Length: 69
Image (cartoon, rainbow, N blue to C red; front, side):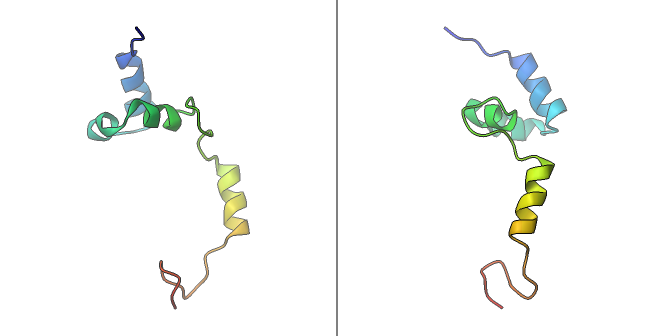
């Protein structure tokens, strides 16, 4: 039987990620693992990758969120 290190997970979520208690407890273990970069998904988006995406897909002035003008 696997056990969770609740104190360690709470510290990582609330202190490390800055989650509020309600936000922490609303997460599934898989979601928390992804936020911490330890899950089976990709690591969290870093600043360099965000900048790369912003350059590749810049916002267009005059467009609303639905793609209209």
